[in-house]
Length: 295
Image (cartoon, rainbow, N blue to C red):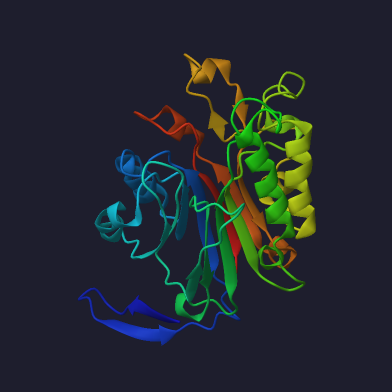
């Protein structure tokens, strides 16, 4: 990869090559369910200007591809964008400062509902070896945790089953894969404000937790949040709009995830949740979740 290096105050530059085998690259990656990218583009811009991740994965963009605010992202320095959107519902996007070698979309449950997009970062991005990045928006599942009574919950369970059974989603030994997104399940006791009170609430029911952890186990994925934060500590990425004072109530859930393949486990350098974003004007009910990975 080439890098421009200042030579002296008059602004002339020299160019040097970077050997990525000697100078590993740190990839900063953020996932965020934005709950309408056009409505909240100013919040996205605020975050990008402050944090400058290399790659931003958005869920619930809620707009068709031809209405996505490409020009705004380009002005912010994010010129490489992979989209899978639809009008008014769902939608995912990968927005990057780094170019992609390829992109792909998968469908699940025989539905065309814009819940997945993947990209490959490789030589074009200056990586020594390819990295596959999957961005997901798993169905929320409605309010009734009974697939016989609630088709939305049945869809969610089927979606998780298909994720587990989809071999290309799961890395082989040595593969460099990252899976992120709003997975709409808080799988561990301290991923919710009250384990006992939420056992019959969609997003934390035993069957959902079992199925999501089954996806994780199938690919031997590393859940970065729980690799960095003890299971005994509460961790949230979502706070309901229904709370009059979300800070005082603090009834959160960890619905947004970043997983890496075993080959990247030793490269995890940082993990952070931008909790303050929940208090911004007209916010999403989810907040940005960021990891730094040596690649």
